[in-house]
Length: 240
Image (cartoon, rainbow, N blue to C red; front, side, top):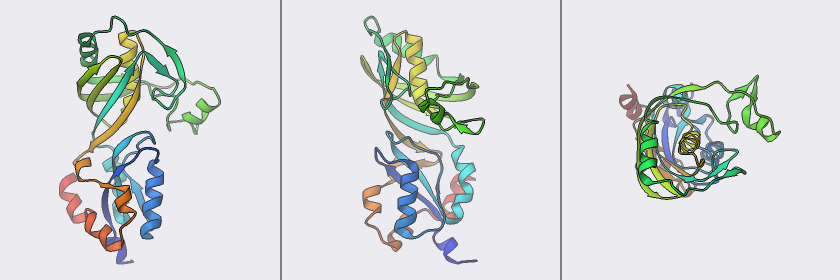
């Protein structure tokens, strides 16, 4: 066994910038530090920013355990505009007036989504149907029936309302699509909505406040990576 498998193992907390895929970040770190095994504990869409938990070496075996952790996000939904992907990257499919939508109505509807709820995953997602990712079918203009999934919204705080923009912070379970949550809230309000901005603040015990920027990481040498990463000894008490 290569001693470096343990020396290089651990978790690196990255503050992912916009336009980078989670896979892009993994590849960047793998190439920069010549590591054999690099993974992550939960994908972030390219348009989203924030905490990406990168797994190094032996820590990649913790992927299933860490991916299942609760997440906390801050975001903005845009009322009155629906898109095919339920976020700002998608094509607009419908627009509606937000006249008559009051801050009180937004707060009331948002509160109805707290707890255990059923959510239908979006077509533009990596979920597979008969071995084919849904987003590939969506590109072909196809829509297929998706099974609803039970998720948990532990809390949903509306932090600012300037209609049509609504800022929020959500604490949710694994498998939650925040853009679908926004679309469902918009549907309940009767005006439609989409997710216009998203930032992951935490994943399980890990917080974006402790994360490193990708620009900084790209300047590091191997020793700086070892100093910045959480070792296996650091990690295990946090997740036990």
